[in-house]
Image (cartoon, rainbow, N blue to C red):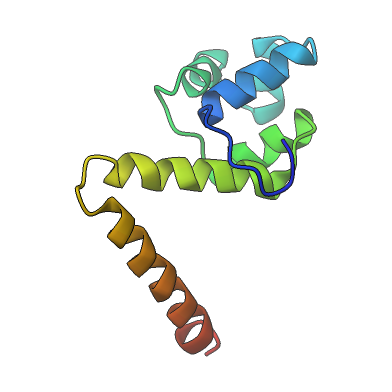
Length: 109
């Protein structure tokens, strides 16, 4: 993944494509994550969400940027949550303002 580029593929698709391009087997990556390969398969098929720890370990083993993969995961999570809302754009703008407020006022404490 490139810096600051939002990919339209799902996190699962990104993970599977990178794993396959590196020639890694599902069982090898699952073993590194200390999870069952069926769980990793479900993550790749977007049937199960990975944990933050899984995302960080996946980025490491797949030689992906950790922050980029985390951004992909979080943006996908938010997108699925609000995709069917007519006011999705307004929600995102309001959320961005709230994040700025929280970072400047509440998190400093």
